Length: 85
Image (cartoon, rainbow, N blue to C red):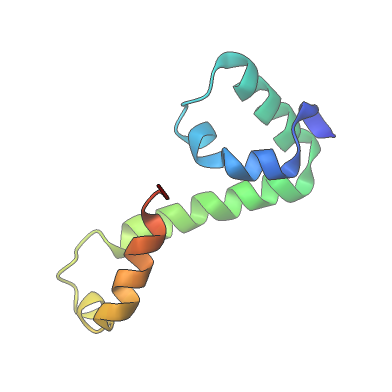
């Protein structure tokens, strides 16, 4: 187990890691795991790329492409972003 964290734990807390919401030791464990685990390192990079793309897409909600997306699909995307209760 790379860095004493499982790949599942890295996946579950990746956003907290990227937003610097973890304590020192957990951040250190994440960094070690990401250094040692090629799969998680690639996953994190893809995750960061997805976030950057999402921000770029929604920069200007008045863009024509956004207006052409059916409301039910847009709502499904927005619902995925909501934290579960």
